Length: 242
Image (tube, rainbow, N blue to C red; front, side, top):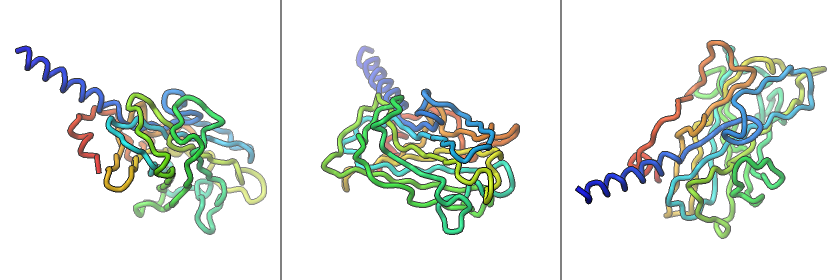
C-alpha cells in the first residue's frame, strides 16, 4: 500500500509540473501583469499598443536557442480592414507593425531569458490566411547563439516577444480605415527550439489566456482558435516534444 501511495504521489507531481507549461498573450505586459482588451479612440497617429507573448517552459529543457511564434488575427467584419494590413508590398500600413525581443528596458512582469541578445523578427504576415478574407497570420522567429543557450526554470514565466502596433496613418491624409473595428488576436503556438538532436517543445496550452481583443472584440465575436485553459497530462506534454 505504501508503495502504491508513493507511486500515486510521483504521478501527481509529474502531472502538476507538466500542467504549468503553456503560453500567455496580453496587452501592456505579460500574462496576469497585462490586460485582455485594448480600446482606443483612433484619433491619433502617435500611439503605440504593445502586445506581449510569454510562456512557462516544460521541465527538462537543456539549451533553448529560439522561439517560433504564431499569432492569428481575425476582424469582426467580412474582410480584414486596411488598418490591419502590414509588412507586405502595397499594404496600407506597411511599416506600422514592429516586433522586439529586447526587454532590457522593461517591463518587468516576466523573466527576460534573452537579455537583449536575441536576433530575428517577422518571418511572414499572411493575409488572407487560410483563404479567409478577415484573417491574417503573423509568424515571428527569434534566436540566440547556441553558445549562449541555457536550460530554463519550468516554474518561471518568460517573455517571448513584444508586438507593437503603431498609430501610423490612423487619421488625416492617407489614413487607413478600420482602427475602430473589433479584432481578436490569438497566440496559437510558441515553439521552443534547441540545438539539433536535442529536441524542441511546441507550447499551445493557455496559462491565463492565449487570446486578446482589440476594441472589445464585439458583442458576439468569437476568437478563432481560442480555447479555455485545459489540463495537460505528463504524457501529452511529452508528445509535444520533437
